Image (cartoon, rainbow, N blue to C red; front, side, top):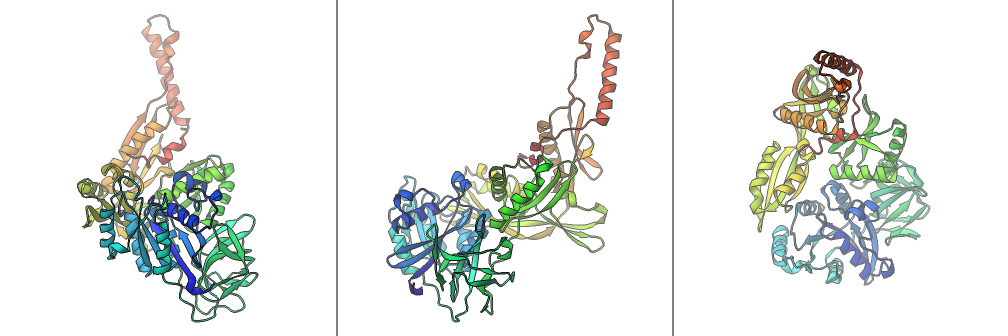
Length: 592
């Protein structure tokens, strides 16, 4: 295939604006998939993707249209998976920006546009869902022209559901998106933009060719990890694997390797030929840094090995997943896992429970903290229980996020109140037509639990939210410990700002009182900072009516039996153990 007749592009949009449906129509119009094999969201192959109606993993596909090869990469829209979008943009020359005609530009739309502009990609604006009664095409067109500085005639209005005007998008891809630039040298270089582990075939790499030719059975080498292997099979995806004899400059395809772990072929690495290696590697991606950490513990310690094996398998296809062993006196052995956000955590939890049949206890999600000790040592702690003795700590720095909220103008007041309640600082307010863009900074820990839910409640569901890490700041932070019957439960400990500690202590002890079952003895539920108790709730004991067998009204006999019961309860309190249910460890998630 002549490189001039290749077009590489991806589809970017906010969540639920119709990326996958548009990809479906393209596959149908180009005849890539037969009508009898067609189903909605065809490229969303994972069961969870189809169930939740969202794209989690990027999916490449090769289409033929008017003697051109169109290589599409369908990308996720949720903020937690923006690293998938950045990987796609490295492998293409153009992007289709899809905007919902009923909702207009949202926070993730802006974030993805900035990512595309950084890569100097040609953007084709598309307004989707024009067939809906609530669509407002003139307003959304004005928003897009303001954002991109394009003419209204550049915007294509489509209905991905009915297929109306989708052929115009395909024509625009051929006309507007430039062909890949031919490589100056004949060195074979290819960028790995995704990889996954196949149980039967080993590691499969999704690559974009940036020069030279890769043939089947060629000896290949990864330039960063310096691991070598054989390209057992090369080919393109349409959308099933279609083997070829070779892949040429500018093409997007796959390599089936003999590797046993994706760590040997990291995403962003450069593939070259072992016999004639390239002199310079392609610019890769930045390493993905998790924002959220949570402890995953099996209900039965017998399942610890199964949990570790399951996570190793998931990490083969999810390069953002990071984990390390953790031990808790109450919960036993488990793993502390790093995620890109709460949705990412929820997806991994569901996959572990469904695909690997694991029964899990998940601790309260937290972020990481940088701690400076008095002896000059620096620590990076990911769990509040890892904080050293306060006397040895000189400074604790917590991560702050830069956030962006897009909302109708009438909700600016409630949103600013919400930001202030989270210790946030409002930086700037700008306007896109009838809506406001609010830039703010806030502690990452305060955005983790229920900020998104509260934002949706305050704005009747109309606001959208996007964030990124903005650095670490020294704050007056303390560790809040929770004691059940005088025993500290490490898995419940949280880091918080001193000004918020009392409120968190009171609300969590109240929640614990609701979820921990009553015992045969009185149980004290306490929140403490060091040795100082800041909140307490008492879980009353079950009490048997020991006087029921006395048929007379003798007060002395009743008092004697009551005193005997009281001594028994006191003895039971000394030796008794409280059984803590798994719901207690996620009580912070439903703090309000």
